Image (tube, rainbow, N blue to C red; front, top):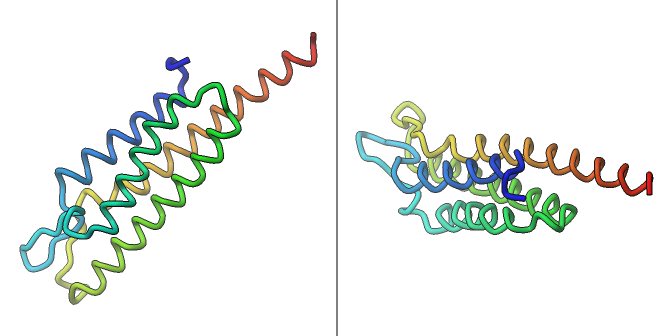
Length: 134
């Protein structure tokens, strides 16, 4: 069942999150780039979300658990984004801060997980309707 569209959404979200967080800065201040690996809390939450998504791909037989875990992962992305913005605000003046591409990992991940949950719900409704016919 790895060919489902929600699996593709979750895989893209995980890989995009991993690549953006590891290779691109969160923000730059006075020409000094700050990576997600510099803040262990932010790095932990991004790692938790990416690892959770990769593990959740193989829960395709337990659709209700998959939906719940995706919601937890969405919350984890929000927490990571919150810690990133808090770190950015405490770093310096707002005029000197330039957003980096790694900050896009959380919003893109949330949107992709939302789309994956819609696909999982669609599968669940299809299976429930097929059970009624029998």
